[in-house]
Length: 579
Image 1 (cartoon, rainbow, N blue to C red):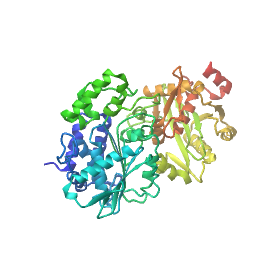
Image 2: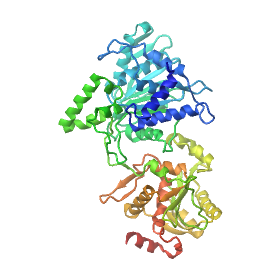
Image 3: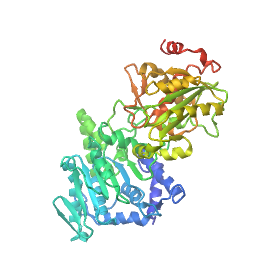
Image 4: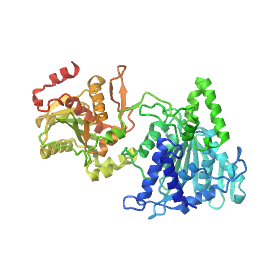
């Protein structure tokens, strides 16, 4: 019989090779597990997989019985997807400390896939069996009724478990483990429970898609700082894209799963079960295809009663258009589309990176353009260089700057490895609490001199850049003000994306720039002109914006790289751009 580790590896191979119906993100989660197994215990990845730790949770889960449905009264037997999810959550440990690897977990799955039952097992395990004394376990929701669903499920599971008789009590809205004095409580904004003074060992966010703000999430997350190995568990279906679950969490966890994306968080486990979409957000899977239902419903679509329930809801949705949105979000786990569009897919940008087969070109003596996005002095400041090449391509390089005193705070908030990027040379931490633009100017001058580039134009966003532009002008740079509107940026922004898609861009695999383009959201006008939208982009896009600023000028010179840019006045440029 296979051990748990080998079973999970075999399961991953079955998923990846389509022997188990699964969406793209499900496959990516399996690929992530296999990558982690390959590097387990290494210098760069210290975590190891402990089968005994994982099995302890499943043995606990097996103590309980189904409280409702066709299996009522029978002992819980974890489904394959539950084995994979919670084998990960509870199996990975740091051998140096003995603490669990994953401090956060996100599982998005269709309704009626045993979410409440699963969360009930997690809540009771964290309070009574995980091993942390005086644990506080909270079930968070916006409404008291929703928060109490899992609470009541946990209570019913305990009541039906003779092995735990006399080991717990319930009163005044809390379940207490008598031996350790650990508690399970429901927490909701509706009850006006603010979370002050909480010290959660585990926090369960049920149906996060229904939360209009991050208030409950933030209260529970911030309360965990004193715990050595807390767990924040989010289980949700899809919903409306206006909420923080989609805008913040779904976007972030999708990037964690995507191997082409630079986002990285080794302590966050992710599983998403949904129907697949193409790059434009259109469904690939046919909602009438019952085999596709397994992608979003690995449990509910695996037995006759569950299939009948989904089938009935689909038939109703097909007859009643007003019911279709609910069917798509709750049963097919599809977030409802909005006007927000990703500017560029991470894999498309990655495909333009230099490699052994296609090396980054020698730029000594080449004509290039400098783009600058200074933003605020307390945030990320970026410069970009774009060089038109004789073969019709563009070579792109860049660099970013961040205040040294705020770097760690920003790293925690933005959830990106700024410190590592500083060590690797992609980012410069400037002394103090604000970016000193003299460092930016000095970097630009040093790079041009050291590499022998011919860069004479400073293409800048006028916001916060007046003094910088004047200083650069004294160094001989021609100031080119790039007005930040669709009239100026529409054609260059679209042209740059087209160049990426046609692989006419080559870059040096700068992870900061890759991260920025992965963050970028495009805003379109009624004529389908586009520009990067800083307000809607969920993370910083300054490195991408600086490159677009440079590309505004570079795109006009790709056919004649021998042109002397000093021959072009600012007026000539504007006439050429706007006709």
